[in-house]
Image 1 (tube, one colour):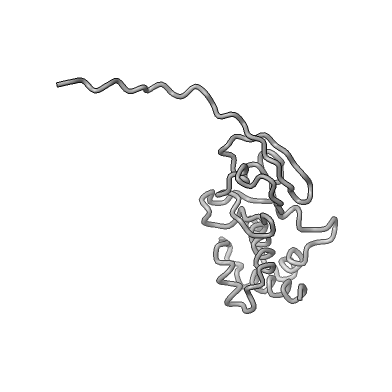
Image 2 (cartoon, helix red, strand yellow):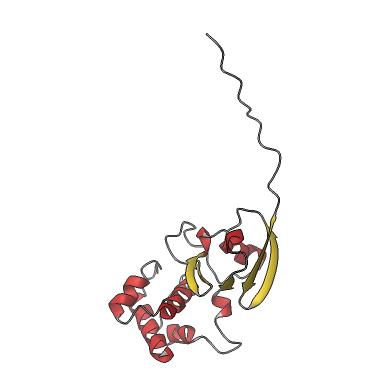
Length: 171
């Protein structure tokens, strides 16, 4: 009977080299050096101090980290930053124009569509993407297309009302 070969149990010593990624974030070009496994969420929050985008479940189940990538809503916790090299990223910080709130931000205030506010940036970014998609015309469609964004406070009727208001304003 032969002895199986010894396994190499030593930990790898070489770390992957950081990679350069260039993104246009809220209208500003940004080039950063990040590890290959850096998520877009961590790049925004930890490298650029854009803390409006929230880390909720970190598994793509709550929608708190939703941002717009090239105008489409995307969960930033499930997106590697290097995969989006050259993309246009819009976070909650990039929706307002100076001191003028985005119509969705104003609608969320008007409808008291937030309670603790933790999910609100992701809700608003997702709603901006939903409006741009142009697929929702009824409350039921808004609820269905926003179902990936969880509000632990249960402000759903107010959120739908806010989105309806913003949709009416954008028509």
